[in-house]
Length: 147
Image 1: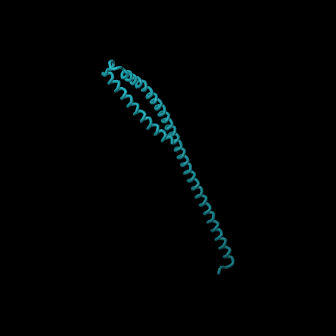
Image 2: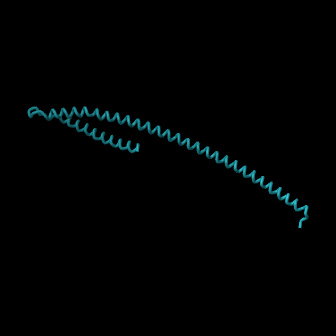
Image 3: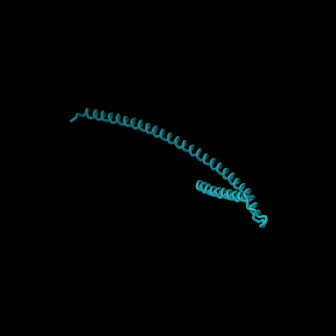
């Protein structure tokens, strides 16, 4: 058994050791907390920068898509005007054929000019039909993109 003076000395030593371990643990915990905070702050900052970069990229893509839609709309309007302009030669050719066909038997002539008028009407109508189909498919694509 320990003598009376040794027991408090041992308790004081154990208390000092526990205090030293507590300080060491506190310092270690503070250091780990600071490193974790720094690490998390760095990762959060990197993630924020990445999100901002993607936001700018998406904004640029949206701007590009809007510009492309505007350009396509302008081209569509021009193409529709060109299609309307094709009506004048078609109407003229049909009118010429109608006038030729309304002639009386004595004035009725089947010649190279009439054949060319029929070919012209056929070509213009073919172009018109293909253009209308193309416009329809473009409108479908545009509606599909917008939705």
